[in-house]
Image (cartoon, rainbow, N blue to C red; front, top):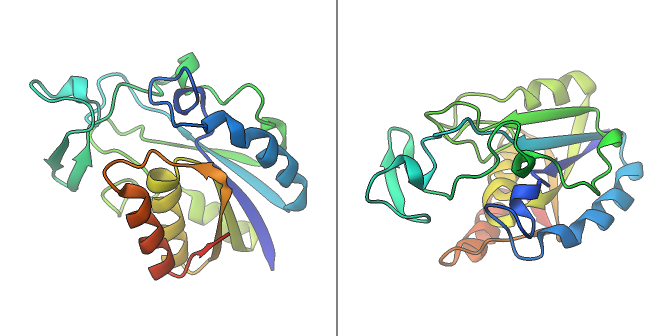
Length: 198
């Protein structure tokens, strides 16, 4: 079986100094780099939002960051403006070994729908193309690392398991936002989906 390392959103925006900084977000970069040579394939994902994205609190008058609103596709956390296309905030962390990547999957580009998962937009129907790439490469096992454990890593891992991949999340190489208990809920959901947490 071929395997792949999926590196989720290790971008400046989610690291200290970024617009949506995850505590300790940069600390995982050396460990991720050290893990890359163990895999046949390395895939990076990149949050890549247009300005004025519907998931930004600034796009909703009288709403604040971290409020939850109902979108046509379900509940949506409103975030600070982050990872806007072409900005330094959207760039990969400068120490991440991007040269090892076979592909970069950009997500969150649809201004009307957010995309936590590396596989689908938040409508749970529109694919990013990652599944097709992995099938073409013959990949059956995935290890996920990156940011943030309770959002993009979580959604990606659950979708991957539902698509039939054997999925492991290396929790030592992820960091969480932990918004109102979101980390515990994510762990429970990943385990229920058959994801192995290491």
